[in-house]
Image: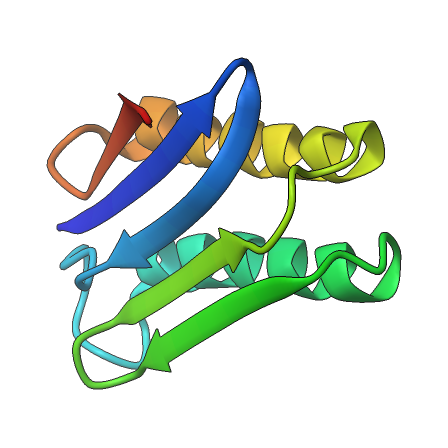
Length: 108
């Protein structure tokens, strides 16, 4: 299962991470894992390129970890991009179920 954690404070995202492998199918053809990875990676790229957001990113392919921590309070534009990622992740969860993706929100 992939666990997605989103840390928020005052309706702003402070950090987010996805860890673990979905387990929908074997490695290399797992469409759930691939969809989650693409959403999270594209969000991080968009934050950097489109919003000039400063973040610390950690990636560990073996464990399936990707973490993004904002260095500053994200702009409204950046928050919209993160909200779009969350929407996509929730749609994956609705389609494939809690067995493959667990989304957790934590207040910091």
